[in-house]
Figure (cartoon, rainbow, N blue to C red):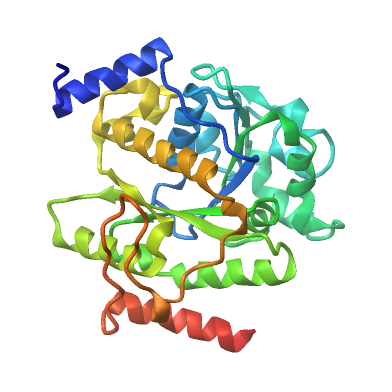
Amino acid sequence: MQEDTPIARAARQALEVQQGDLTLPRPRQRRVFTVANQKGGVGKTTTTVNIAVALALAGLHVLVVDLDPQGNASTALGAERRLGTPSVYEVLLGEIEAAEAIQTCPDAPRLGVLPATIDLAGAEIELVTMEQRESRLKGAIDSIRGEYDYVFIDCPPSLGLLTINAMTATQEVLIPIQCEYYALEGLGQLLNNISLIQQHLNTQLAVTTVLLTMYDGRTKLADQVAQEVRGHFQEKVLRTVIPRSVKVSEAPGFGQSVITYDAGSRGAMAYLDAAREIAHRGTNRDVSRETDVADPATASASDEPGVGPTETVGAGSPEAVHVAQHEAAAESSL
């Protein structure tokens, strides 16, 4: 009988990764995610990199589009990003096709990377005067439609033209939310922007996935934030929570994801579980047709199999009031 202990599970998972035994189902259709949150430091790039690697190591064909001028996703995936390297910048300007700039991640042969270089920092200014400036990325991704099961676009921590390009090119938004109060600051503005893009640029856009990151079970605040997020977003929140982990922070320094750096660590196990949830959701329903963010006033406990009951957002809590204020402003502005 196999031992079912944390150490035994970590050992089995590390062995699966090393031997290439991971398997996950293919989605019904290609899934394109924008990984966005206007607040920096909530785990956007870490989430993009590790979920993409997990899916690729499980036999799926995945593309990561690094749309952040800092290029952290490119670095973590071992992509070349020196000045002059073909990158997403040239793709957005129409100078080259996306296929010409895609590199292969050395740790995951099924994972492609469309890297970012420092040139991307000036892209927003240059795009302003171009035709179809909001849909330049969409055309590039559509040109490689049949080659990938998943596409993840890592956005900069802002709501500028690069992020608008990402949301115009995708059907799904994945929002990583740090389990701290400040992570809820600005969330209403993000949801407002998503709503505006739905109305004017991309009617198929929807928030389908929310991932709680940097969870510290020793603090009551982390638990309270997690409950409020689950109460508001309901079944869109993944059951898996990403804990704070030293290994997750160390891995980018070695040009790797935490899954290839230390597959048995808590962070790697959590991201693999999150990837499994995302993959199984893709086979269970047409997520691209889901409705947008749940209305807090009508939120109820989740009845999804395998998901425990969740509490609705407390009407008097600072987080609930902050989100409600932004949503009220959004409605009045529209």
